[in-house]
Length: 432
Ligand code: GDP
Ligand code: IMO
Ligand code: MG
Image (cartoon, rainbow, N blue to C red; front, side, top):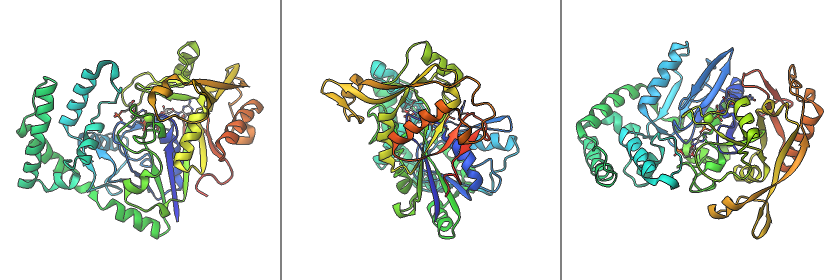
């Protein structure tokens, strides 16, 4: 069985898209299993940048099949637009893209309710991407969601579902938030169009994945967001509304845990976070700004500046454990080049002494003070021309050795630039 899960091990934007694009050269299929278009995965291939929100990052490889699993919440408009963008650059998705008939769709009212809720929350807002992710997952849990199969079927049954939803949507929008109500005809018209346009892409994704695995094809599972944004294991309530850890592959694609072979956790050589919520190693000074500018740390989905800080090994180790990570990919090492010193957080100082994990209570996490270990930096130009792990400067290797030691799993990939070919791999790489 050849299966590899790639997940983010921080607060998202770790460079999963780049890692998946690189590894997809060895994959027969790539599947998304959770989240939606709150994700923004950036690929840079032959000088061309492609940002994907829903379609798996294996799509630039012509022979790779791309699946969107039942655990994803899908905004039909964004999905159809993404197909058009790919078409415009000569990437054909028609025959090799399939989305699950069971996945839940995001409709306009979900986005409007989320925006109104965030606005009303003022100081306690989450800082969401406002893509309707939360309300769509809420509807799923409340057993009132609209799925791809419903959109396609349409008819009287569908209208009945919308009638029920409209009552609640308008109670929230017009009643609670004093916004304009949603009109039934507008919703139905859009849904009818989406149903028609999604139909050619809809299929039995879990069945296809199971077949791929049975027949020995290599399947790559692409995570979105990061483990610290997981709704159960992340820094709740400042999290997303899905499970983002590797275990979510099983529920999100409908395959059993026995089908997962390897879990590659992706982390930046430092840390970033978009949106609200505690971030113990955040640098709110010139150094943070330097990382933001050099690392191009602006959200691929919302354009918001990302908060930047030192590598938090305590939070990372917690994330690796929640994922059962078998290997680590460290990205954006080049962004640290030229710093005199580099810090790694190895624990948190709290009222009750030193701790080495992420506490469950956000009020305690907010007060955690990072304890750092300091390493000498490496030269600004020292990564130019490096094409193997062995070729890395001595100081960079010492830094990575310590990360590996604290992680307790091997670093099998290092990324030293946004381009596909600025990637260093240990031995035969994560597939083996
Ligand atoms: P994702 O959401 O995890 O796929 O990450 P994003 O695409 O949102 O953010 C990562 C950003 O870093 C993108 O702009 C990538 O092109 C870029 N990137 C990825 N790896 C590297 C790297 O090793 N070095 C540099 N400088 N940029 C990188
Ligand atoms: P990728 O896949 C970084 C963050 C939002 C917000 C919180 C909840 O590109 O790594 P949501 O819209 O999901 O309800 O927002 O989660 N967030 C991300 N941060 N990268 C992402 O995805 C994110 N997806 C959601 O900023 O703090
Ligand atoms: Mg991103």
